[in-house]
Image 1 (cartoon, rainbow over the protein chains, first blue to last red):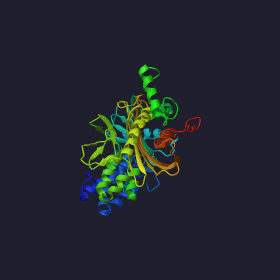
Image 2 (spheres, helix red, strand yellow; image 1 turned 135 degrees about the horizontal axis):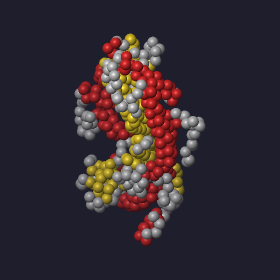
Image 3 (spheres, rainbow over the protein chains, first blue to last red; image 1 turned 90 degrees about the vertical axis):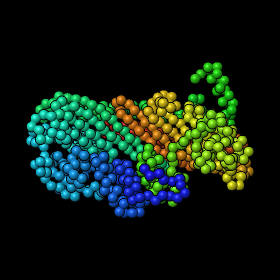
Image 4 (cartoon, rainbow over the protein chains, first blue to last red; image 1 turned 30 degrees about the vertical axis):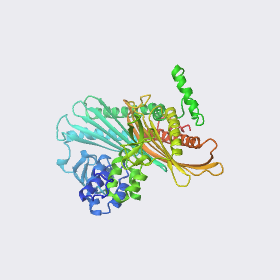
Length: 294
Length: 256
């Protein structure tokens, strides 16, 4: 990061430095706010060329990090911008409809789709497994998350004719929540990662919330149908547990966590005696010395 | 500048320092405005003479040195650093003593400092600062916080005394960051800042310190409640939108 402010003569930044800063702002924009951040950055830079250079690099990173869901032009559904589905910088594979979508990262739209080529698709054996899992999980997502979009990608071993491939299941629940589940080969070990973020703006300030959870589970590899059902059950179980535990902790915790920062009231349970502070302080010291109370 | 302030509002408060530094380098001619309008976490320095910590801010700074409210000296030492008048210094000493007790009562730890200086025409300005580290490695008594900090800056402009009353205008800013970690519910991090103003005309019968103190206490209480509600409210919202609980959504209004 360029070191700013301080000296009498402000150093002029190079174009490259300015672009790096612009990229940083764009990449760190909260979920769903990148267009606003982009507008601000553009106005501050005052140089469209540098902005475009930065945007071209930053937008794809942001879109992938937040699993952006873009509507495909032929109304066949949404394609998720995910690293696992990336064929090249602007082309993303949608496993469910077996299509490849071309996207404009900066405008955040899907421009065209085409059917996937044979070599882009997994083997029929893998596809059987993948699509059964996809169907089961999609059902779960549809029931649970009103605006959820999900996809199941085969991330390795897609040409396999037997067990051993790895899959990644991702859910884009809404702008601020991403869930990723990894299903691995033989034993279908399920690792998961969920990321919730929320920003709250109010007149007098702003506050942002970030939440993360990781966990692991496993099941035994079976036929596609049975595996799909048991994996979905694992996912459902995790989500329910997470929800229940959040409920439990956070109903009780806020008061205690805030107390560690600042109490609502002093131990005396009365407001502070501004008029008699010195007397109060004296009494307090005496009580402490005599070991009375806490 | 508008775009810069909008950016600062959107970028995560955890990245404020980096963001501000970036903006200062992109907009060097706006540095004065940026520095005065953006809130950054407070820094603390040691008074080498009395071995007590004090808080750094623009109001006790001269060049690269800062004046300690305990010894009234600049660190690193400064030849002709500005000092408050003897009357104001007396008030400042008392304010620091009283505020220390207040801080202890509400914060059970942390560092506080008060700086008072002349404004024009029989008015003065007082700045009350508190920095609390509530993490379990810091002063967090109950050990719930992995990481937690509360920085409060209260600036009160006190007008001249007229017929036994004076006008007090308080601008308060609280910067907050907390992280809780739990095996089953994962990591939660909340960070942000809130700023509010309050003005009163009060009788000076009980002295300026009493009036200022009460205003600050009231303001801190309100800010704490607002932040608490946001935290509680936001987590509740996230929990509720995950999926509606089987028996419908229960929204509990936070007690005030």
